[in-house]
Length: 206
Image (cartoon, rainbow, N blue to C red; front, side, top):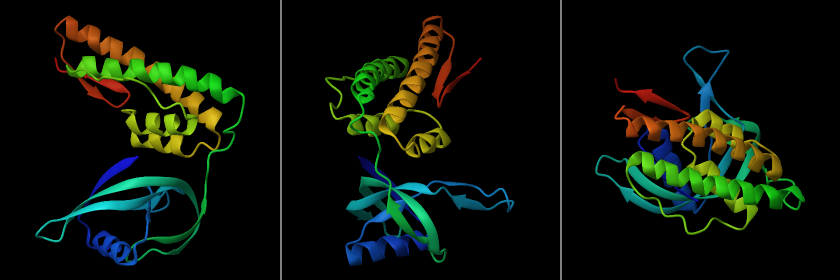
């Protein structure tokens, strides 16, 4: 999956330059508030490795880069935190990829995903053409997780689910929930009530 990133902090400029020089991949981790230190953040322990595929350097040293997501990983422990975080990790592949439940959930999640995208298009006043969804269960699960317009915390929850059947089941529940909300938004638009699309909720403009 493609992931565009804007690099502006000095420590991350250093990291990206070192990755480019050493032809190395890097890890993407979401940060959360540290419950033990007010005003500080700490990284989640499950993330995704990424490979840099394109770099556009700006005059002031900032960079716009395009990366490709590779695989999930789990942080075992941190080696250092300055100037940027380095940790020891292990691969965190999806379990249960051959489970008999997978086929059923692929069909259900795929159908829900197609309806979801079409509803998003209708709410935004455009057309989202969906010719087909991935037949590979893992590819479908990752695509749904990336495309869902939900909070980053909920995306992190999906990323951390160990087993593929559980992930597809959870995504199906979210898609069903979002379908209800999107239909309400579309109905509100038809009655000339202003609503703005947001993660897992909607807001009236009146």
